[in-house]
Length: 606
Image 1 (cartoon, rainbow, N blue to C red):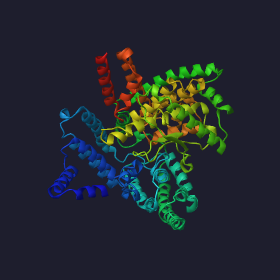
Image 2: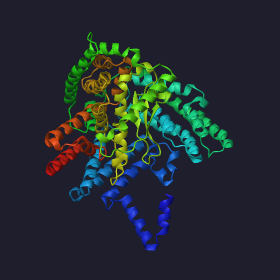
Image 3: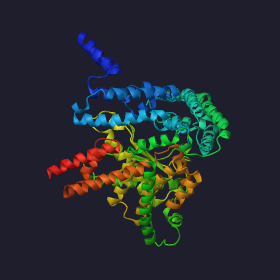
Image 4: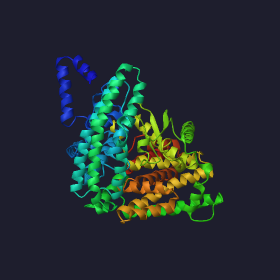
C-alpha cells in the first residue's frame, strides 16, 4: 500500500487525477481491459479472506501485513456477500466480447466462466455443507492455520498472532450462527461426525493453555526470533496464554455446548439423499467435482469396471509372491502383517519413515528431465502431521507453499501409529502428494508467467487430484517402482480410487448405509479397518469430492492415448505434460480442447 501511495504522490496534477480516476473506474465498474477485470476479481475475493492472503503471501511481498491480524469472516451474511460477488462477476465477465479476445485471454475467460457458473449454480445449496467435521472442519483447520501458515518472522507477526487468537471468539460465533441456520433448514451432520468432533474438541481444551499447541507453537518460534529481545518474550507469551484462556477455550466451549445439545436429536448416518432436495444437490456435486456431465449411475458403473480390472492385476502380483490362498483382502492382510514391511512404532521409526519419504522425493526430482521439459526447481520438506489433528487426518496431504516461495512446499505424513504405515505403499503416496504429483503441478502453476493470478491458484478437483493419481502411475512408468511390492502398493492405491466411485455413489444415490460402505471397501482394498472407517466417513462429509481422483486420472490417460494414437512417432511425453500442466488447473472439458489443439498443431508440423 505504501508503494502505491508513493507512486501516486510522484505523479503530477492531471496525471494523478487521471490515474486515480481510472483506478476507481476499474474497481467499481466494468474495467476497460479484461486483464484488469481478471485481477480485480481475484483481489476482491482475496480481500474477503485474510487467511488466504496469509497463506498465499501476496501482500507480504509488498511489505503490507494488515490482513495478518484478522481471521476470515464465515458468517452467513458474509457467505451471501460472496455469493453476490460471484453472480456480479459472472455478469461482468459475460459483457466482454469473447471472440475479440486473444487466445490466452479466451482461455482465461473460459476457465473463470466455468468456475463462476459452478459457484452460481451451487448457490441453491449454499448452506448444505458441514463446516464442523472430523477432517478439515473449522474447529481443526483454524488452529492448524495458526500453527502451519501464520507467519512469525518479526515482532509485528507475533502481535498479529496474538490478535488472531483473540479473534477466535468472534469467528466461532459466526460459525455457530451458520450452524443454527443450517439446522433450521434440516442440514445436520451424520451422527458419527458429532461424536468425532466432540471428542476432538474436548481433548483440545483439556490441557492447560500453556500446553496447548497454539501456545507451544508461539513459544518455539519466538525462541528462534532474534529480533524480539528476551525481555519482551515473557510478556508476549503471557498475552498469548490470556488469549487462549479468555477467547480460544470459551469459543470451543460454546461449540461443544451446541453439539452436545444437538447430539441426542441426530441418531442416524445418512447420505445427502436425506437432505431437502438432496438428489439434485448430489447431481450438482458430481458436476462440480468431476467438471464433467456424468450421471451418478454412470460413475458407479465406471467404478465397478475399474474395480474388476484392477482386481485381476493385484491377484497376479500376490500370486507371484506366493500369496495364493484366500480372498484379495485376506491375502493383503497377511502381507501387511509382515514386520519387515513396517517401521518400529516409536520416534526412531517415525524419523526413519520421514527420511525414506524424503529420499524417494529427492530421487525422482533428479530424474524429471526425461518426462518433463525444463522442470522447475523444487524445495519440498517432509513433515509429520501435527499431533493434535492426526487422529482424524488422512494418511498424507500436501501444502504447495506461498506464491512468493518464502514458505516452502511441505508433504505432511500421518504417523499416529506406525503399524498403519506400509513401506511398499510409501512411494505411491510420495508421488501423489509431492513429485510428480501435487507439489510439481502446484509449483508449475504458481510460476506461470503472463497469466491472471487466479490461474495460478484456482482449484479444480478433477484436474488437481486426477493429475496426482496419474502421477502415481507415472512414477511406475518412470521405473521407480520396479519392486513387485511397490507396484502392488500403486495398484492398491488405484483400487482405492476406483472403490471410491462405487462407495460415494452408493452412499449418496443408492442409499448405502455406513456399514455397507465399510464392508465393501474392506473386501475390495484389503486396507486396515481403521483406515477404511476414516475414508467412508470422509465421503459422508465431502460428498462427490472422492469422485474427482479416478475420473480425472482416466480422462488424462484417455487424452494421452488419443495423442499417441493420432501423432504416432511425433508424440513427445514431455510436450504432452507441458500442455497438461502449462496453463494451470482447469475443467477437464477445457483441458481436452487444449490437448486436441496441440495434437492438431503437432500433426501439421509433421
